[in-house]
Length: 245
Image 1 (cartoon, one colour):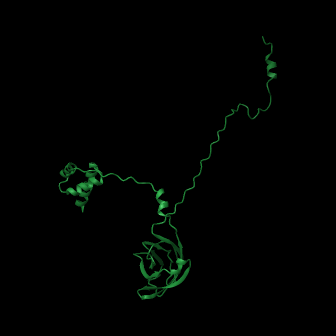
Image 2 (image 1 turned 120 degrees about the horizontal axis):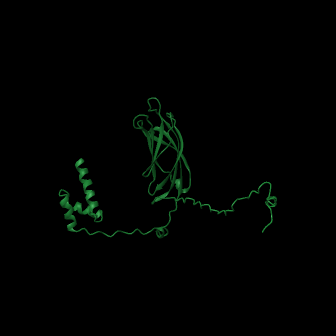
Image 3 (image 1 turned 45 degrees about the horizontal axis):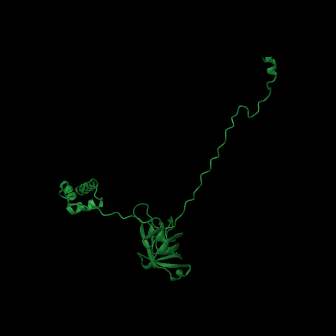
């Protein structure tokens, strides 16, 4: 039997400050890898039949008349092919607006000119066209030159009698990838097989809609790939729209 007394056991107990790791469980720290940040891939789309990139800077205009009752707030609209661009509004600029706005546009093939209009922005009602000009693109810009020139404006005062507009032109050709390089990257789109529409299918729906022509029902069935419920819904929308009209 152990003869050690309680007093002797107490003398063996540590007296003082406890160590920092006292009663602390050692938990392994699991390092979590930071997620990889994937930078977005910018894809530059160039429309087909593009000759290059045209830059037009609309600097200023000198107009012969102020068409505003109190003030005139002019802005320009430049049309390149089928695309139109607007400049900022020169607020209360009157006959001497300044924009200093550069517009970049893809120049389609066989487009040799641009169309410029000057509008007066109206607080109430539609904006008013006060001048315009049809500008042939300077041929030297296609050789790498920058062209800075004034062009006569037309309007209510007559042809070329509305003032002058100051424009700056530059051009940068774009090399489009060859078709042989593009074709392997394109995924083949499966072409759905035609669905055979029987006389019975057409007759069944025509009994529901006797006023609808048989060929129309057949075309709708072909568009819905034989789905009769979808065809019935389409015919209901069509007939309800015609009755409303």
